[in-house]
Image 1 (cartoon, rainbow, N blue to C red):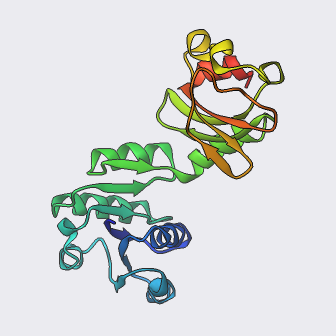
Image 2: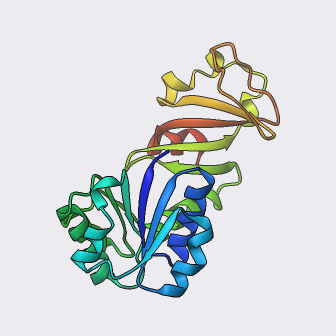
Length: 215
């Protein structure tokens, strides 16, 4: 369990708060909008009404005590940038900030953000890949080069073992797990047979995965 400071309780912030609550983390929420604070109180540990660009308000939250500070402010980049910078100045251990445009990402990283999340860009990339290939079921980008894909097993691989298809040697791709229905099997060996009806979680360089699965 981690302690999280979540600043910005609009739609995006509320989705984050809901998931953090499900995962059992302690969450302190903050927003200058009293209505948003009251709406989110049942989902989090505590919340405060205040302007996150005000240094004294942020100081009163004890930002250095949190494992992660998330700046989820949308629609007001100036406030997001000022908040991010102040958090770092006040000793925040790890600051994650939201960007809505490429240029915002650069400014946030220069002004104290340890990491930047760019929801619109990330979901657009995911949707473009997910819904333009029938055999791609899910996709997670790890960095600019490496990704994890959940893919349907190609027809010509059915009934063969992992050693027989030799995907690691041919394409430099690792099979991490097999899924059948709702069950995931992480017990993978060269003798594992690729059966019909299963999907694979594969890890590799995006270009290698493209070539292997014709994305």
